[in-house]
Amino acid sequence: MFNAAIFNKVRLRWIAAAATVIVVVAGTVTAVVLHHAPQAKAALQPHIGGHFELLTPDGRTVTDETFRGKWLLVYFGYTFCPDVCPGTLMEMTKAMENIGPLADKVQPLFITFDPQRDTPQIVGEYVKNFDPHFVALSGTPQQTAAAAKAFHVYNSAKRLDAGSKEYVFDHSSYIYIMDPNGNFVTLLAGDMPGHEVAKNLKRVID
Image 1: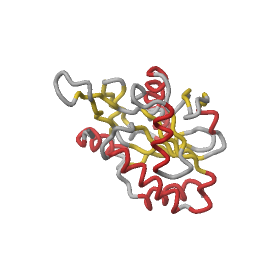
Image 2: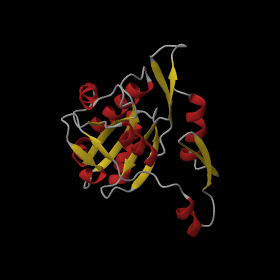
Image 3: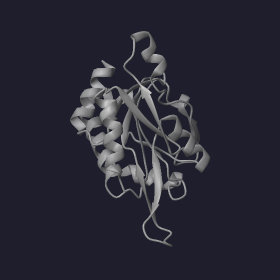
Image 4: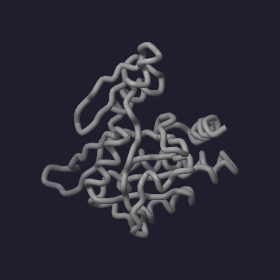
């Protein structure tokens, strides 16, 4: 289940470049002031992205360095997500179609934060519903949690009913663009239409 209040609070501060960005990490909220003197801005902006070690559907171990040389379009979610995740992945698929030949320079990644249910094989089958360029990544709970933390991804499991083993997640929904050297470039709203995602990709690649 998507928590719109959390999403909108963070999105407005990132996308509209407001004075303060709220970053939720491991259940805590940190306020990071962005609008200071230019020489201080880079030091104060939260670091997005970093090292991760995860598994591909065929069981290979990959890291962030595996994808060097490609522009990355990264999304965190889970395969049991009822609407937000499939909607975002569909818009990413439209974006890949809209950028034409530039698609060969872009690697879209879907990274689960629900490894208990999302095995490498399950996420691999899941992304077959979307653009063929997609690579799905899973791993151990420790590996997926570390990857989510590196990208400041918020997720919190919620039981559907008292005593039930079934659960969904409240989670943030962002598309991360990383450059071929693994550096964070920009953050896009998960509900951004595919043609707008494509426009942002073309802008940064060109």
